[in-house]
Image (tube, rainbow, N blue to C red; front, top):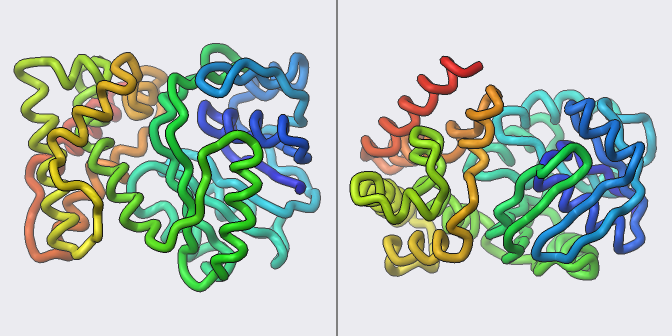
Length: 305
C-alpha cells in the first residue's frame, strides 16, 4: 500500500517506521528540515517498546504529487486545519484518510475540509513517544491504536486499514464507538498535559506531587463528569484510579504539550483541556478547572513563542 504520513514527529515517525518495516511504500512529510534530512541520509530509526529498527523511507518537507492509498494525518491538533487545506488539491477520491490526534475537534476540521465519507478517526494510547534525535523516534510503551469511521465509511474499510496496522506490529483494532475511545484517552490527557506544561514535571511527578496531584485528579474528574453529562458511553468507573494507572505505566513520560512549550511551539492544549469547557457548554454546564488550566498554558505559550 502507498502510505503517506503527514506530520512525522515522534508519533508520526513511529507510524511510518513500523508500516515501512511491514513492506509498505511509505513517505513521510514534515516541516522539520533537520529531521527530514536525517531520515533521507541515514534512514528512520524507531526504538523502544516495538524493538529497534532503521528503515529507508523517502521524507519531504512538502507533500509530493504522487498517488496515495492511505493518508495518515499525524500533525498536532493546532496544525490540522492548515495541513488538511494543503493536501486537498493533492489527493483524489480513492485516498482513504486516517487522522490521529490528541483531544477533540481535529477530525471535525478534517471532515469539513476534505469530506467525511472516507475519513477514519484514530486514537493512539499509551506510547510515550519522543524524538531522541533527528531521524530517531523512541517510545516507552505501545498500548493500542483504535480506529473508527467518522461518519458513514463502511466498517469493512476501517477493518482493512486496522489489519494493515496490526500486521505492522501495532495493537490495532476497528471499533464501532470511536468517540468513547477519544474521551477515555482525553481524561488521561487533561490530568497531565496542562499541569506538566505549567510545572515542567513528568507524568509521574505530577501524579505524586502533594500540591499538583489533587489538581490533576480534579481535572480528570471534571472531564469524566462532562463526558457523562454528554451521554458518552465511556468504560471508566473510577477516573481517579484510571489516570493513576495511566501514569504508573510510564511515569517518566513528558506530555506533548510540555515538549511543545519547551521547544517554543504552539501546543494542542485547546484540543485537550480546552475541549472540556466547549463540551460542558453543550451539556449546559461549565468546566472551570480545565478552563483555567487552558488559559494558564496559553499564557505561558504566548510567552515562549
